[in-house]
Image (cartoon, rainbow, N blue to C red; front, top):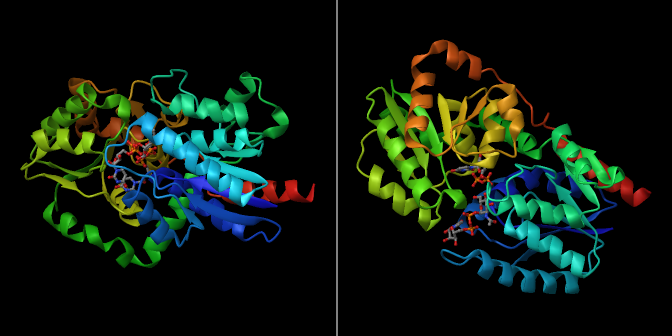
Length: 373
Ligand code: UD1
Ligand code: UDP
């Protein structure tokens, strides 16, 4: 069976590299890798550290790309790939435009689709935007749905999806996280680039910040920048903020945060360095999906700058809290964690509500079993 795995952004690459390794270990599957490079630099960081060499690279990213321009380029180019490769199955991950369009291009050719990280739902098509709809479109098409949690599987069942095509596997981000943590524990030089910041901020309480969501562009992003500035007014904290290369993020952050001596706005970190940052920080402030899943595994309280989440398991486990993008609320919740040891202890117990690190093997085994069947 010839399978093409299609992905294009940093989070897809992080969550799929263990799946690719697991599929390639099964000889009954001819595994081909197609990257759209919807992200260029961020994707290449992951490909390099994971040793994945794409068979096809569409190099599609443009500066400040629009949703419709990207959709148009993706549908044409992915269609050509499927026509020439003639795969028996297409595998996609999550909720990006690459994911949604690849499933649509496969559907136009009646190629079956497997969806990794299926079934996450916020219930609000504007949060996250446009990811909630991307994920729902894939669910209409995919005949194999790898749901990371029982909650995600239940969401698919509630939409009337065929139970025979739904598998609860755990989220493969935990596979990536645990494998990477093991690698940097064994070889600390893989994440040694943060040492100068650790020295500079020695004795301070480190907050890790990331932000990139499209629905937060404009007012939400400005609020986030101002909240980070308010937090940085405390002399006992230091903020390490790897800034997403989307120009709509950098420009806003530069206005509020440039020149503050306890805020390090740095380039995006490769995955081993980011895992190290999660490990060395005290609190995580983010609007990221993947980071919400990783922080609980490391026992790091995570304040989520979103109104809703399609990943409620972290909130239910007590390690994540939704704080939205209101400046005062973000600051108040963060200060509460800094100043109230009980509140911090309550949120900093390690939990693994998203998976056990074996999701990729389960997915590969199910796909290999389908070949035998
Ligand atoms: C995309 C996904 C989002 C995901 C996020 C992960 C969509 C619609 N959005 O959002 O679901 O959470 O990735 O980070 O699929 N850029 C670079 N270099 C890079 C990456 C991006 O310069 O390596 C800049 C480019 O100017 C690019 C812009 O960021 O045009 C936006 O990239 P895009 O993939 O469209 O959106 P993201 O906000 O990154
Ligand atoms: N990440 C990284 N370097 C960074 C910031 C994040 O490797 O500088 C990783 C993070 O550990 C997580 C993933 O990128 O696995 C999340 O990507 P992002 O926040 O861009 O997208 P989302 O998960 O929100 O779709």
